[in-house]
Length: 92
Image 1 (cartoon, rainbow, N blue to C red):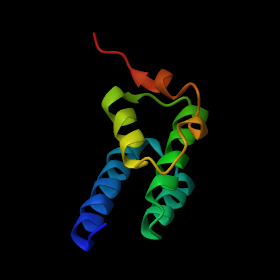
Image 2 (cartoon, one colour):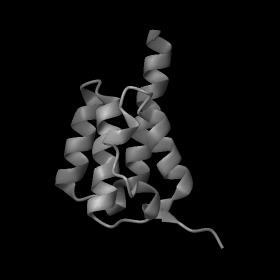
Image 3 (spheres, rainbow, N blue to C red):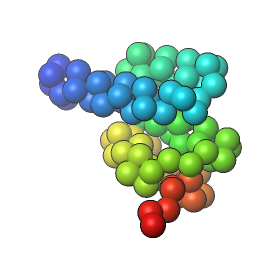
Image 4 (cartoon, rainbow, N blue to C red):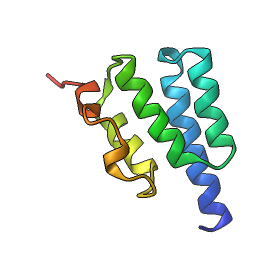
């Protein structure tokens, strides 16, 4: 991945984490941000998925899709929580 693509990828990760900031505890935020800052974006997204499920948090379906996309095919889909899609806010 080129340096420019890496910067864009990292900005997308940071943007997603920032949007979810209000629903994360300071400890959860720190864990996810540390992974992002250490170049472990896919692992950060996996951690975020588990945080959402274990905390029974609701987010737009597009956020869940973005989490999966940002995992960048480097995380086995079977490692994501099987009920992650249940965290999606249903559209009316």
